[in-house]
Image (cartoon, rainbow, N blue to C red; front, side, top):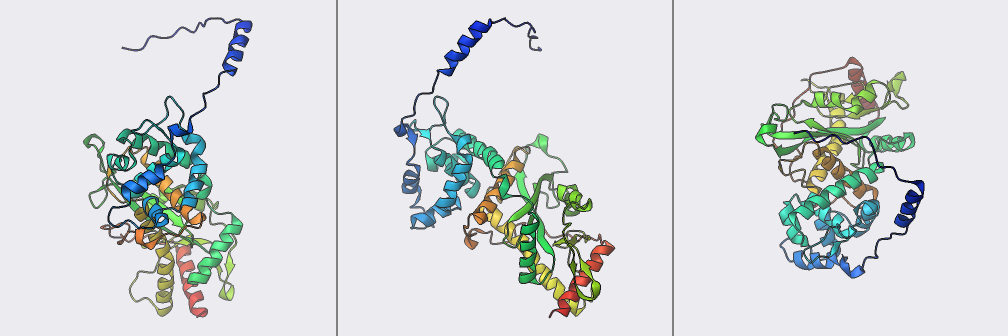
Length: 397
C-alpha cells in the first residue's frame, strides 16, 4: 500500500518563538570525549596480537608496512586527509568489543588491512577486535572519504609535468614525445544468479569488471577507467573511455610535436600492447612477419616502455589484494569506488616517497590466464608515426 500523502499545510510558528528556539539550540554543545574512551593504543594491541604469525618481519617499522603497505609517515598523511569524515562521536560512534570509540587511526588501519589483505571482513575484524559489521562500515566510510579527499593524486598532468614525463621516457627508452603506457586488467568476482549476464562473463568464463590505466615513468596512474563489464573487448573498452573521446577531439595528447630527422614530426602519444588498436596517438608494436632490423629494435624499446603499465598493475593487485582475489558478490555500483581508491593509494605511496616493494607485487602476470588478443585495427597516421619512430631509433644508434 502506498504511504499516506502528507498535507502541504504546516504549523505556523511565531517569529518570537522561532528566535527563542534558535538561541536555545545554539547553546547546546556536545560533551567532551574522555580520551580513555578512544581506542588510541590500537597499534600496540594489534602488533602484540598479530606479529607472531609466520612470515611477519620482526622489525615494527617493516611490520607496519607488511600489514598496511605504507610507512607510518604516509599512514599519518592519509589519516589527515580523511580525519574530518571519520571522527567517531558518541552515542552512535563506532566502537570495539571493549566499548571504546574507534580512533580515526584505527579506522584507517582496518580499511587498509581489508584492502591490502583481501581477507574476509570476519578475519580482518578478529585481528582488530571488532565485528564484521564494523569492518564493513569502516571500510566503506574510508573509501568514500578518500575518493573525495585524494582526487589530486590521480589526475592528468599539466604541460610542465608532461614535459618531465616525456623527457624521462626518451631518456629511459629512446622514445621521443611519449606520454605514458596503457594496459588493462580484469577484477574477478562472483555474482548472484539473478545478476549474471553474458556482458559480465569474460572470454575466460569468469565474471569480471575491467580496469584500464595509463601510467607514467614512475608507474603512477595518470588516468583510469573502470566499471565496464569484463566481457567487452579491449578496443571497445578504450572507445568507451573518456580518455579516448578527449584524444579524438584533440583535447588530450595535444601538446607540442617533436621535429625529428628530415622534417618528420612526432605528435604526443602513449604506447600499448597488441590488444589495442594502432592509432595516431596510441602506438602498438609491429606484429607482421619479416620485421626489419629497425622495426625489431623499435619493438624492443616499445615493449620495455609498455611493461611499465604491466608492472604497475602487478604492484596494484599485489599491494591491494582485494583486487586480485575473487570478490564475493560485490555491489557492482560500489566496486568502481573500491578500485579507484586502490589506485589512489598506489599513487599516494609514490607521491609520498614510499617504495613500491617488489616482494608484494604479483609473481605472475596481473591478468594470469588471459591471453592477449591481437587487434587488427590500423590507422594509417599511426603506422607512419611508428615507422618514423623506428627510423629515429635507427638514426640515433
